[in-house]
Image: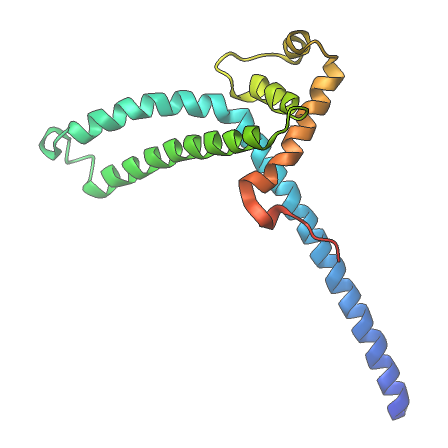
Length: 174
């Protein structure tokens, strides 16, 4: 079967258009997945924030004690200098993450206008405050319905990716 140049050109155009369309659809799916991961990661950080803070309070004491300990006092058979440095780095990462979250939440609070501050306050009670509040307790304290608490939390969490990840969290329309 012999194809004319015109037929080859038409086939090439159709295949190219389909390949471009498939590529664009794939890129859109990847962007949506990336945004979902960002929201998931923020929710995960918020959910575990109190435990991380408690862990870091203990770490601060341990790090001070650890820094004051001389190499001679350690059991060299079981601990190497590399493992000591690794432990220190791990503990510093945990502490850095707490400071990072605190900084981002403060930035979010400052970015809220008077009307939006209610979202931050609900988020703070749910995830950030020392005392842990249930949805019903927050609803009672804020004098709102439990569904409103959920709506405020959803709104606040949707606002956070730009604060946490910057311009890369913004999806621009074509």
